[in-house]
Image (cartoon, rainbow, N blue to C red; front, side, top):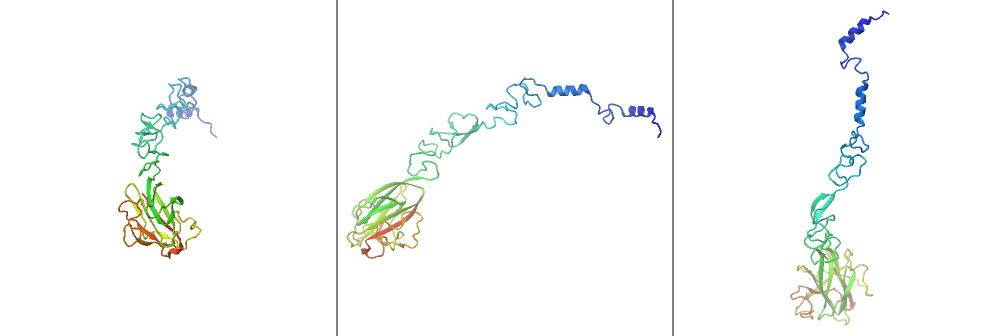
Length: 303
């Protein structure tokens, strides 16, 4: 092997140059530069124990990665999020019932006249709000999507009977001359009214009913009501017969005996408690009167 000429290296060094990035000398350590960079990495201007490279505000010792986030519009803990998990929705409470209607702000603290709980479906009435114990006729009093209705029920049976709604017995039906009136609170949706009637004289039997809301909507007895073709003589009726969804497909449709005031029936203008010009009709089954008992039912939907 030939010995290398030392002047060849000198020539190469002169051609390449120490400042050239491609120079074999460019990668040699520079102690002064490294020392300055290390010092910059450890700089802690605010003395909070966090170097400037990790501290998102090295001029404020209350701001650093280990700080507790405050609701102040500042990223206190340097996670890139301002007031994280500290803000919430606030809703306008116009009626002062502690429930809000429309969204007013998203902030740490609510503006005047706002609350943190929403769901008020009528922010002009302090009695209407979620979980309200008040019942307002024709309104959704507790904001659950269903209205409350004060239903008026007029009923009479010749000779006697019981009235039920949704399997709850409200009371007796009164006699055929006068009848009786009930009021019951119900909510939007399907309901069932039932009449269990019986004839004490074994001569003629019939029932009549008129249900009405404050908005004028009504349901009255007619030939669409259904009766049990095999009534239970024990006085209890079929299980669930006064509940919504009861299977009455095997029941028959009632016999329409006639309206109030029809001269062809024996009841004349009775019963006296019924509203004037009520379209309700006297109904019963198609059996002989000596059956002595019957169950009549009807399902209706409140708006």
